[in-house]
Image: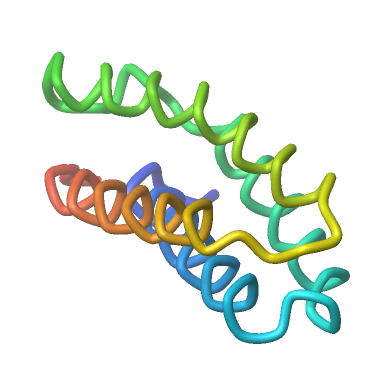
Length: 105
């Protein structure tokens, strides 16, 4: 079983990869982006929110879950890459990586 810390790290890394593919070669990487979104969604759904150490971390995770669905939809429902969305994905990747460092499991 994967720990919550590793799941958050995986999600953060996946967001970074997706953001890079959006800006580098969106049209040829779309299938790979879909695969990574599926993996990220599975990790996110299996994450135990109660394991987050602080109220602020729990709120950040809730905000991410909300924004994630919007970002995912925006990316998958367009034929053009969007640098603003890619930047947002990178930002969340950094935030979640930091939050993972706060977990002790």
